[in-house]
Length: 409
Image (spheres, one colour):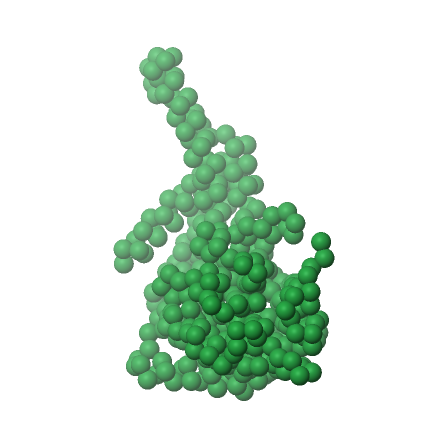
């Protein structure tokens, strides 16, 4: 109850300030009433969806949109409030000057200036429009990102070997079958040797994947499809009626993955063989820092491989790479992760800037990183969760080509 009171107070304060800008810019009363009505509808729907629905903590598409609209509206008001608050400070200073320095008998507080409110709304419109665009188009703006990584000890038979990685499907959030079918076709068009999925197939429940089984069953790769579990796959964020029901949900998800064609690695390894040489593929269950499930067991997963094997590790959470993988006795040449989504919001201009607020939480949050001769790719995610959109950090299909030898300078 307290958190809802805090939310309502903050929402009202931000809306009040934003309303000041609207009122200053236009004198049409119907626009004022419309603005207030929109605020009430957005806040009311958000509160209803998150208190009156029977799904508990399950984040359905309807809930996601309720959150997306309240977020967009609050950002609009927050940005405009920042400008107006600065103006209020200046107005206050002038008022105090007139009262105590100029000795004016009556305290005079200057009126808001229309052009300042126009500037405030103009600036605020940029993130507001971006968030709306992210919900309308950005969440399905799939990008194929290609990387070439060089290894001196790569087996000759795997020189030029191509791996497609996808991560964080979050099928419970999807609302457009045509866009998903397009993405599946895009993945298949890469014609990679291997397809790897690094966890979070669903938001909470295995049943979320049922409408999408046929679509993802069309995924193909020459040497097969492999997967691991992410933190959302265990059903930890649902209020289950019993532990048995939760266990059955996980078993159902494992069955669905098998039916789709994925070989699910649960702290296990496989060997990919080619012309008498082999590559070790290792998959751990979720291991995450900061309160996330630590079911991953790297030692167990690697017990059947040799120290001199070329190793590719699938581990959903990149914090596992920092905490355990890099300094392990074994040398894991390439780790594939996801989890962060790049926060679904940021700015990326290749060669110029790469930024997202998630960088304050995760050291490695998107793209390729290297440490001690070992690489990790953090996939930005295929789907979305929470905010039903993406701004600047687009859904990703990663294609990594392995090359023998050193990278040319």
